[in-house]
Length: 228
Image (cartoon, rainbow, N blue to C red; front, side):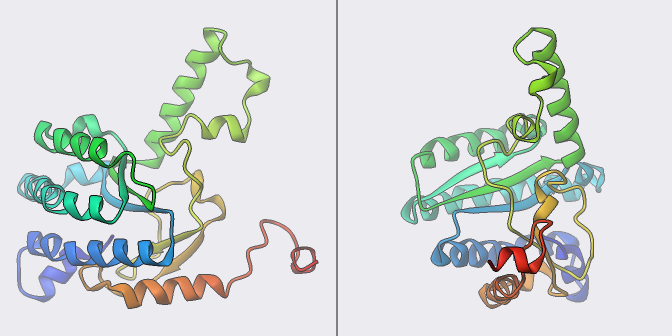
């Protein structure tokens, strides 16, 4: 979800206002995905690198996250949406972490869609963490080296139990994935749009999905193989 700061600067406002105005984009995207039958939506909300931003901006982001969770929990429950998180959530302020845990507990039985917030998340950190745990399990005899496969590695990631992403949307005209799901996105279709995140609405989501539907997903095979 990129472009909040640039959106605010275009309005002659502080960067924080961009983050505040991005909530409408989150609502529209979540609602649009649920209406289309999407089962898993992950929003890259806050990266580990974002901790390096000015302290005032980080504090404002955390406060905004708290307010958003408080105001949107009822909507999640009414729409049968389960809230989930990935990342180093132990680094979040205690109030933010507590509200996240409470909302995840309240929505844990919801089935329509899982909304995952990537918070204090880094794909490189996730992979290294998985390797450390595999090493520990190998030393303790719980895992044999020959049993380490792509499938078994998946089980050690933050996203264990969640399907790999099929479509990854990046807003604001940047053409990179910024340390997001490097392992899981091996065969994800990438979609880049110049729209800044606070302006992103359902029509932009639909455009991205239509573009995705018109692509040929070969997974290393030839066109002839997948059309047989």
